[in-house]
Amino acid sequence: MSERALESVIGLEVHVQLRTRQKLFCADSTQFGADPNTHVCPVCLGLPGALPVLNEEAVELAVRTSLSLGCRVHPVSVFARKNYFYPDLPKGYQISQFERPLATDGRFAVEREGGGEVSVRIRRLHMEEDAGKSLHDRVEGATAVDLNRTGVPLVEIVTEPDLREPADARLFLQGLKRHLEYLDVSDCNMEEGSLRVDANVSLRPRGEASLSTKTELKNLNTFSGVEKALTREIERQRGLRDAGELVQHQTLLWDAGRSEIRPMRTKEESHDYRYFPDPDLPPVVVAESRIEELRSELPEFPRARRQRFIEQYALPDYDAGVVTASRGLADYFEEVVDSVGDPKVASNWVMGPVLQEVNERGLGIVDFPVGATALAELVQLVEEGTISHRVGREVLHRMLDSGRTASRVVEEEGLAQVRDSSALEGWVLEVLEAHPEEADRCRGGEHRLIGFFVGQVMRHSRGKADPKEVNRMVRAAFGGETDGSPSEA
Image (cartoon, rainbow, N blue to C red; front, side):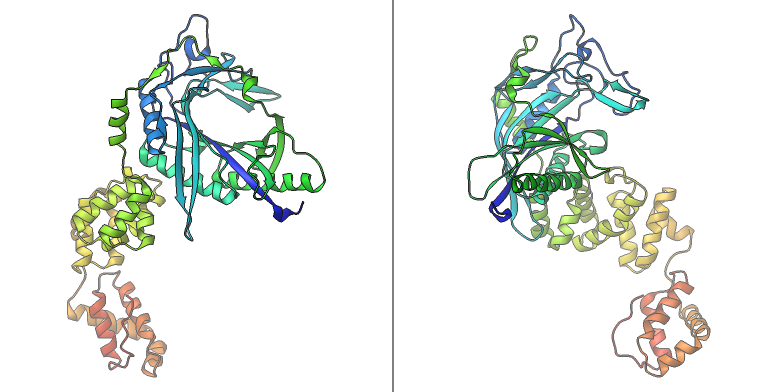
């Protein structure tokens, strides 16, 4: 069968750590980075006689997640024991949900950059506890086990096999991560294991509805890794088919460092786990009234907010996409708009100087110490011409360093624009005298050098000179011999 006749079929299992301070069935902390095996107790260690108690906050976060994905939340769901033996699973089973999950039948879509969308059905969303972590680099010649993660609350989002391209899988996951961050149910920090992905992939003749033998890819720690691993596995399966060999139903490990796929184990079926309802936990009952209350509290999500910004604030599509990249950034932008008044001016400052400072200082926008009102004061100084935009960026930097207001920085450091004619004429003359060759060329007709001289005067004045007045004086110095186009200061 030719390569063109085959299509890839991709489904995802996304494990999301819920943003709770305590574990799913005990009061141990979920804090990341603690010393190994310090956040454990008889419950999460599975010691005899220890009984689990469900964390209600985790249930509500899971319900919020389900509703946000358009799922049908079942008023009654059941926890089950998933039995398997592994060093990081102290009880010998994991508490999960199987036959009666919390929610089913959802859908999530993301836009493609060039138009169209990737729409994926959500088969089910269920709650479960996390396992521990095996560490292969702590003890030479041995594997260590850290059980701090044991019992951490997760939701597993299982998609239908609706994806066809690895790039679409990456796009879907990026959109889902941003959606969950807007919802504030998880920090989605992949480096800390708060969001993990397993991917199932198979090939089938294009146009057929039946599914072929699939493999499962694990250890996918980045979205680019998901795309690369899927691409490599699709190539591997095509190679097997071309050679007349069968694809085995197995779990594969992605080695990002070597860009290699390695067999991990034969893929288990659900009956291998011997699921049965956990006798220590009653069914989870969520009242319909509470479900509707949680539905009413859902925030405005990225796609809707982006479209509203385009319509309400007349922002270009690019600007709207940048300032809605995170919920915190969108909130900050709207606060700035309220204070500044001009949405485009606000977006220019938020997308430019503000994000530059945020990124350079390693801050989150929610931790940005210059509030909307303080930024608006700075913007007003620039718009009124008290300082130039270039100096305004420097003022923002000094506000962050010192905690001072924009007005105080400008006043105390003498940064206000100079409009005094004698001072400006002196700077222009000094610059012309320092560049006699360029001055002669400008008089000879190279009028593009006007911009050069304006820039030199601005540098000479350390940004204090009024750029419009400097532009006028430089042009006058050359007898007004220009093409009439404005020069950048």
